[in-house]
Image (cartoon, rainbow, N blue to C red; front, side):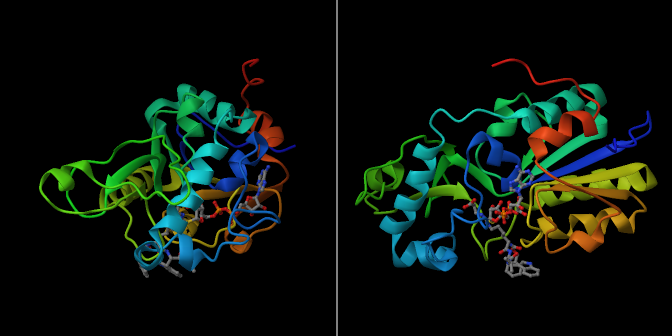
Length: 252
Ligand code: BV8
């Protein structure tokens, strides 16, 4: 089995997708039985879909909030938290996931590129996003209390990035700065992602541009597999502890 070439000089940039949480029991998006089945993306993960049917969108995200009850990080999340402790500021984790499992495993240098399922924000006013673990009953779409106090009616929405919405520029700037500073010392590791969603899917190209080496750990070859220097097919929870040279995860 291969191990990542981590030297004292290495800067490790990791991108994770839904596959890294699969062994925790969180459904992925595009595997059989994935999240999008039965739900047209345009209906549940776009601003237009939310305007058209906020009750459907809140039912979809409420199901996902309930679905995280009792879900814990798996060996892949723990391996990434371990290697972060070893590398410190020579490590950066970018996740497309909104399940919070990396932070639950102890990861701190994490960019939640697509937001956080357990946060809501107002669809209208500029109140800051706030923690919200409520799943809301079917037929209920929560309203903003601050807007109500001002005599306005405004829906709350999940604090996540839908298709067609822009990613927080500060996140993209931080990733770019890490990549440029690393240069040829960069090792880019993508884990559990179908490589279909941008701008995350283009991070491997940015890594190649600065002369870094790129690794992929995935259950199967994804759309952008040819962009990677090294491909390790299999389950992230089984492969990562050895690939990263970290011990077994803490006994739960
Ligand atoms: C934007 C919401 C500016 C939260 C999500 C350039 C080219 C083409 C299109 C575009 C482009 N630039 C922008 C776009 C448009 C669009 C896009 O990418 N469209 C694609 C799909 C055609 N991007 C955007 O709109 C982004 N915004 O760029 O703004 C702009 C806008 C418009 C036009 C131009 C510019 C915003 C993207 C964010 C969308 N929000 N989610 C939520 O509900 O979760 S994306 C959604 O898909 C999730 O966040 C998810 O994370 C993400 C990606 O899916 P994956 O994580 O990869 O999951 P998936 O199931 O697909 O794959 C899992 C993989 O794991 C599989 O390969 C499987 O084999 C593997 N696996 C399974 N088990 C395991 C495993 N691997 C290892 N171990 C296991 N055990």
